[in-house]
Image (cartoon, rainbow, N blue to C red; front, side, top):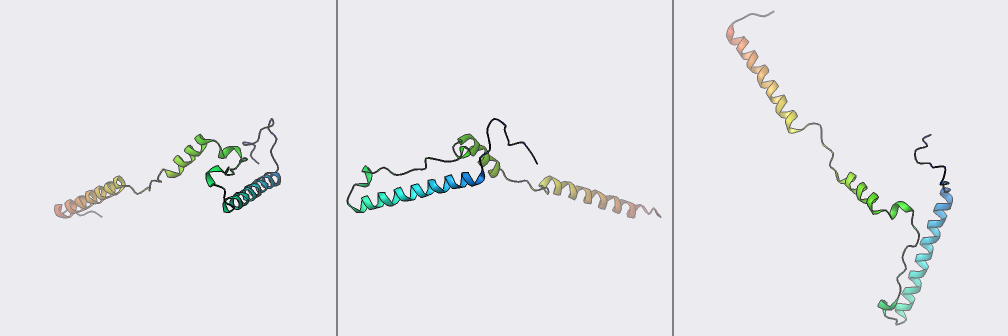
Length: 112
């Protein structure tokens, strides 16, 4: 198994712990949003409330440069191997072969 993404200095988090942390964070946000909705329906001005945000995310979600590089990779179009140059070269080869065939037929040479 590849050790490329593993570092001895930083211990790997157990996947279950990371998922549990994310689950509790989503639950916290949901509860805070319900609380804010109750306060707004109670008559408090929405501009006076603090809107809950995500306090915890894995580090790769925070790095803007990583996100930009990933978007750049995804947006680059994949080139098809049959380009116009390939088609032009094929047509030129076919024309050349037809010209040679026609010249041979017109010359009267017999080739076995």
